[in-house]
Amino acid sequence: MNEPIILSLPYPISENHYKAPRIITLKGTRKQTIMWYLTPEAKVFIAACQKVAYAAGLKEPLTGRVDLSYRLYPHRPLDYKKRMRDLGPEWDDSVQRLDIYNAIKVAADALQGIVYVNDKQIYKGALEVAEPDEYGARLIVYVKRLPSKVTQQPLGL
Image (cartoon, rainbow, N blue to C red; front, top):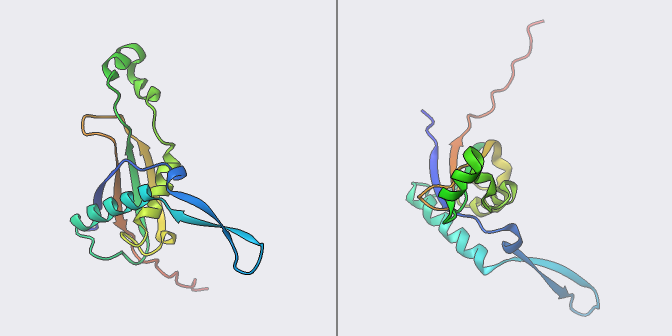
């Protein structure tokens, strides 16, 4: 059975804090180019992802196609009970959080080389923003290997 590997990652940093630009002047010229580098916050996030993946039994990146599903749990505000009373079942719409696609982009980049070799291996997935809970802000990633693509047989015409 192909049970998912469940990774409980820390709440992702914003993509704006993941990579930063540096302007480089090329030697012997006046030409400048932009080089992107990982920020110290990104390196901390990647190290945390690696630690979680190793603890889940991933000792080397998966090869082949993968299915990644994400569930983002935002920070639960201190006044969540008041929001529940005042706003009803959709109280969590008022909670500040990262854009889901921003969180996924950062996580996909951070997991590259740890969970899978290259993010081009991601063929399937799902996204969900969950209601904040008592367990804190986090990103749960469900990783599943997908079966190899079955070659279609020619029609017997």
